[in-house]
Length: 296
Image (cartoon, rainbow, N blue to C red):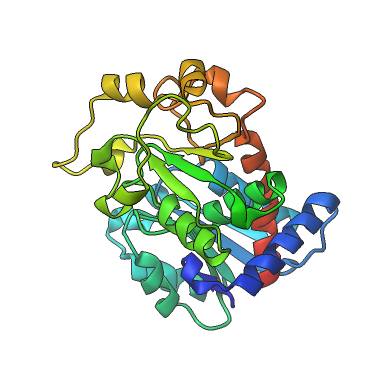
């Protein structure tokens, strides 16, 4: 198993082994086995990234990989070279593996078909389809803060429809037999299929929940038919002190980043003792190093 396009490419044994390796790397960092010695990995990001790109780069270098940082806007793509020819060119340059982010939904399936068997690949996000490593690091973080992940009670708040993290996260939680999941936010940003799991805002509606997973509004992915009254969103769903008091939430707060401070969450809450945001970022480094160690 050396190509990770989506959580569907994994199984429970692999995930458990990955989490075990993540714990090991976390305890040993930065003294890691140089599994990337004499190997080259190429990072291709067609969309902006801070956490995902830098954690992959840092992890790869810590493992001894030679890292090529491919910038599409500074490449022959601007001269008309196709995506397929770009990948073929990099393969001819003896690249051993790829980490790719791309705006096209499900392009990971095409990429997997293009690559030789001995070349590894990790999807760093493709359109609204998948973001497997974000889901993995999130669930690993949940496991560090809850003794029994099968019984963890998780509420997802915000722009569910435009998140590529959520399909991956739900698939992974299903695999690990965690089923107590609910949704909160503007109903026009939460697919109808989740309607039976929708939580209405009222006093103490989150008092028994363990984790509140907050999502930013991804206006860059809105279609012409999508709309949002931001003032109404802030009044009703912004995670601030008043929201926490009214909902009765006492658990852990998570966010995949980037955060739009002052919209879906306030700085006070994001930096509070309830927040696991920076723990997620740190665990992303260890988990991505662990994943590279296992598949390269």
